[in-house]
Length: 392
Image 1 (cartoon, rainbow, N blue to C red):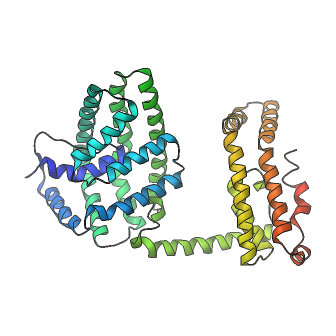
Image 2: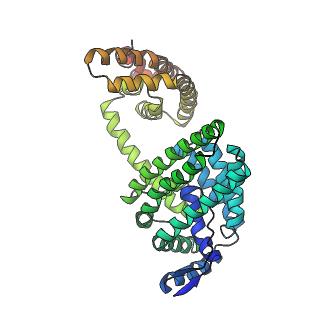
Image 3: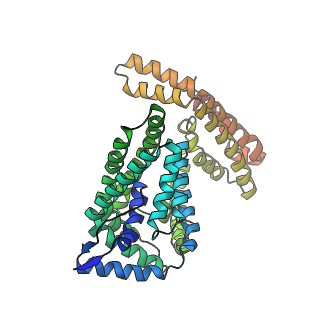
């Protein structure tokens, strides 16, 4: 057996602990005994990690990836943005300086939750204990993954779906258990908090739980072999650029086939009328149906952007009311109640339908030429029997 001192253990456990649980420091009072093969892997990874270069060179890539993930997942609440800021502050400190990382995390949380000196000390102790327990419990699974990731980055090799599938399968128990660790830590702190402190902490915990649930769903997808660099925010990573080009080409080919099939069926306007997330598809089909040139496509894109912004702003202004009505509709147990709730929902969504109708009119009158309208027919003529008829 080879003795692994606390500093060595911290270097490898802190990255996983911070990524999964946002608690990034491991403090062991005594050296930890590791089997020879694991200790050898640690030493190997340490040597390989040196080839990656200075930590400050990695920071731009890490921050860009994290920003992409937060944007793609829609993690944009004030609580999400606080978590992102903490990640950024902690991430700029090298993983081999866990004490500084821990201080950065605790400083942010102490300020955010207005913790006293005693509360901060309690949080510090509890975090260290939980992180150490999880590290020791999952070390044999975490270590090979970290070695593989380090080796791939050091050799400038892009990650593959097969690698990610293996990694997340090994890390799944740690990911699942991290949520429980957060609960244990905060439950102890909760007993010492005032109402105002507790309110802020609970809001941040709710956001964490939403992010954790989103990650769990992604992990399930990755375990089935469905992964792309974009899932980890790596679309701007030079190492993954060739891979991304292949994925883009694949998606382009797939979208073309789907578009061709949809064109044969015509444009189903009713399906798009109150769902602004589908309007990109509608405009793409519109431009393909009417054989728009590049200038017309760009003009249509501008109209689409303005229309979607207007629709999103309206939906956000009535978000709670729409969500409540949708919930009432889905839980209604008799046809009469369902009809009433559907009428309420149609009323709430009618302004979005109106925006869609205006967008269609602008596309037809501002983008298409007279020749195109005569050759292919005007989509406005069918609007009264499709999207609007079901809304009014």
